[in-house]
Image: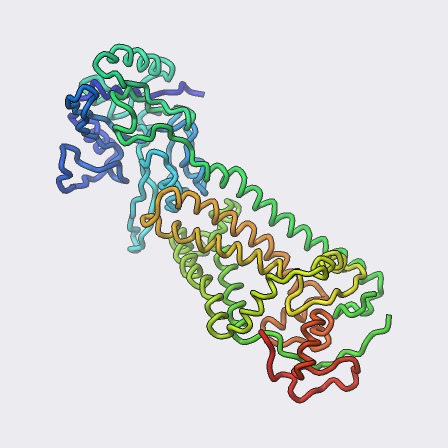
Length: 276
Length: 242
């Protein structure tokens, strides 16, 4: 197994330049999505099928009553225990050796199960039109530039970040850096924390947040939905066993019926009025 | 073991509304199962090209989903009396219903058994009905948030996926037994033609649904069957409850 990598995002070093968004669009050939003015410097409400990372701009009143202008580079977290991978009915979503989570468009049928089960709501469906004019859908999200990782490069967003708010490297080293950074900034941001939620087994994008996750619209304790666990680990296998069991029962019934009818030399075998 | 002479007299068991409701329910259920099968198990992924790709399968699934909702309404609107009888029977449970199951297991596997007197629906059919009502509610109820996730809270959509799975998983297991008993099992085959034509042989109805049959005889709707040589009655098809 290749080394597990983590993208470490230190939001306190981000200056909101949005170069990561541009680099992402550029590398992944994603079209621009012009938006109406949303009331702040933020360009898009959240990630979409064509905008895999969005820079959040949050005006936050801190505990001292002052204004903090918080930025966060938001994209797929690449969970260790990914809900999208769990619920995908086509095995189209898989983990790579790098620890990233990727969607195989050859297998994706556009059902949207991943879209509705992602605890961070970062997956979206995109509608395409084939050469016959027929529409079809595929799920899209940040790939952590897995195609770049395979070539020994770092994700485009990380490479382009000019303030060093993003680093990419060995998982343990990155998490250690994050923890040290939190200690450094505790004076200025008493609520600062490492966001590497264990409810999804830890993530491969690890943040140093200046405030509580909810300030950034992030779940405090994200996890694979309980419904998804019951669905995929219990309901589906048990359902398959049940149809197997009833099928075996009727096949068994058919066989014993045939044997018993033969023993009776075929007399009275139709109609069912010969019992007793 | 004397073999009673079978008469060819038929009696009406099901109304047209029931026959239609049942057919729409059966066809749409099977179509829904097939159009979703490649999502349930990769073993059936070859169905995608057959169904016109994932998009074709999705469209067909939605068309049959609408059809799947209609049977109850067909029955209620066009044969409310029959529907009411069904509902009444489903909540009526007596000792004979429990006895039915011990005899049913023997019958299922072809051993000697005796008929336990049953009303219009036997205990097995009642269990089947109750499970199918329960699973239909699960399947249809969860289908809406799955189809229109934008109108429902995320948690409802997420639980919808689970309930849809539980619903059809349970339903198909029961359907396998239900279809086997009607189409293949020797003793209940007349039930299969019955659910298509609405009519079943009088002797068969008398044996399998003795209480119902005797009641209809009392009302003068069905011929008395004690004497197999005089089975015909002019108003045999006049009416029946469901």
